[in-house]
Image (cartoon, rainbow, N blue to C red; front, side, top):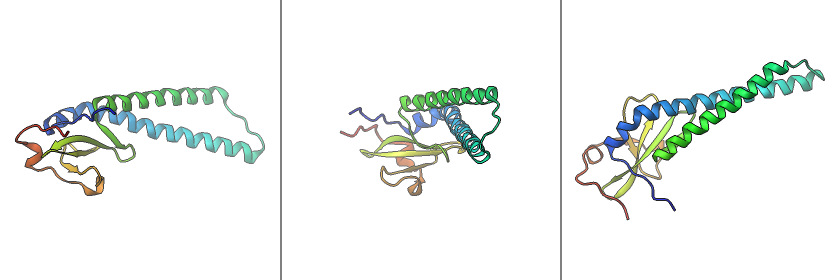
Length: 148
């Protein structure tokens, strides 16, 4: 099993500008893909209900090509976030977690898209609802500890 990458508060904070950009690509891509899927379902419904329907094949093919491009861009953005070691938790509301060692235990620094900086953390099992404000133990650890 791969060892989980961990971040100090400063490291995580310094990555936010790059991650915001990548995460926006992924979030926008997800919304676009969902819209294209809704359009496809509506087109299928209209064809079924009317017993046939004139489809603009050129426009439909352009939309399907766009779908493939957006899908690839979304996958690439998510892969880059993953390669950094940051955990994508929710593309709909925009949640990222940064594993961090605090007093010998791993916690997750939690960032929500739209927040200007890292302000919250939670335990591995608590999730978004268990977020607590980042305190001095996280901002200024005595020494960098790695769990065994």
